[in-house]
Length: 330
Image (cartoon, rainbow, N blue to C red; front, top):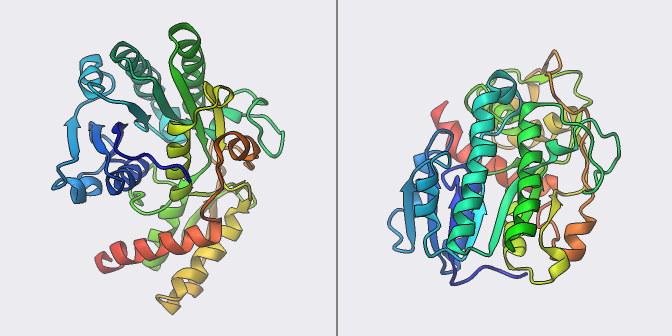
């Protein structure tokens, strides 16, 4: 697999769950890495292990501030743009802030990268862009209408990237992430993702709440697959592989009921009582897509992407991390 080595790389949102996993691997590969984060959702503890590394630079700043963006891209060869306000429910409750960060901040980063002469810009897109499309599996050129403000913001990013590539000769690649999970994903807060939320509840002996009847399904994607996709996208040279978007997923569907079953079985190996924790069912969430399954054929063909972890293997890795980091605090 191609790896980024001895490059100057900017990771926006680097104190976040995905960003910090990317930075960890980049530092292992002798890169000079700058992290830009305002810590609105990123965590200082996620990047604490990197602070003593002379190849790591932290810039506390906000992508909504163009000058912060300009400072961050100085001398950079590759931008990996992870900074965003995630969560469909958050965007429904506060569409203005989601738009300011995800669209305004993205545009600032594009302008700063363009003016600094950064050629390769890889950005976090989203499976939410597929909206109400019922096509299964999801293929990149068939999308529906967005179902949330968050989905709109991520689609607008794709449109901006397409235009900047055509107008300014930039090389931009969007990665449509599908339900990413893994170490460092925050289990707390109103907008926590489903896997860390369920794991935290189960470790605490509390009944997880599933929105709906549990038949909704997702293409859950372990974070190491996302790190791999970012590296491949940053380095691919074929002209037809650039200035486009790719699904980043495993290409397999897991219902929420199946997910809970996997989590209980894995956690029961650490604490047998968890196997007996009951499950609660609540109302469906507004803006939720019932089913999500990705075709990763395009990423395999043009990027050489091959998921390193299937769902079961990824869950084992994630559960081990959560048990190590959460069980002692309960």
